[in-house]
Image 1 (cartoon, rainbow, N blue to C red):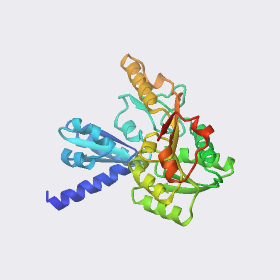
Image 2: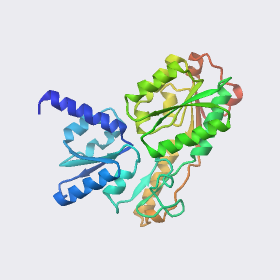
Image 3: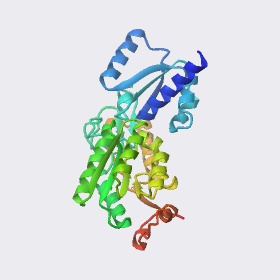
Image 4: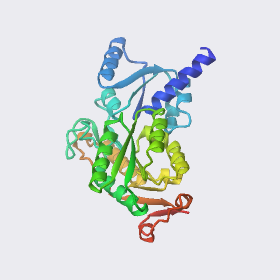
Length: 313
């Protein structure tokens, strides 16, 4: 393959995966042509992408991203499947038998991934979320930190149903609190520049970002824009505060990982995924970056600082 063509293919694949809500990787050496054709048809019908890729190209396309962890399993003929909207859609199509444990996939009942909270059914279980309650809490924290807060820009992946539902809950909470909402849905990396332009033309008083694969991969662009424009931010994940964001409030990520591991352990002991009720987060953390606050000339009230689980100086 010519070097120029190879680099173009890597860049194109990297762009596609940056928009993906999740990635399923499989060894495709045993699949028949008939089965492959049927599988491609089902993926397309459910809004998923499917392709056979060279391991070297895939490895370079995921370099520097969270997907890099799959590098050790890239051997032999490899096929990948991914969805821009539903994090579990590709996995659900790829297998009806292999257990799937959800984490960070939004509300799986609302998105149709599972039948119900008490009995998910099929081969899926895991952790759901408290989107409405958490959205209201984040906005209340932002209000307490920013005097005169009136307009909030909300940035989310509009191609992901789960994240759109999370955005809608945040929008409802904002309106109940009396805030004007600036809606900034993105679908691919290039859309962030449009969102930044909208905020430059119509300046909000703060930014709330809904976290998923797309927004997380572009998080540093969001943090840098907010710093340049001197805009307070609140995020769902603590790592964005360590990257320079102002504040975050959400489920403690280490606890989610531990509870996901517990689901896996129960399944390995013989439990059926569809019989294990979905669980909700129980431990939450609130982080404040005082260095960022000082750069914004923003004084965080002592009463709010006292509630923080971690203060970054």
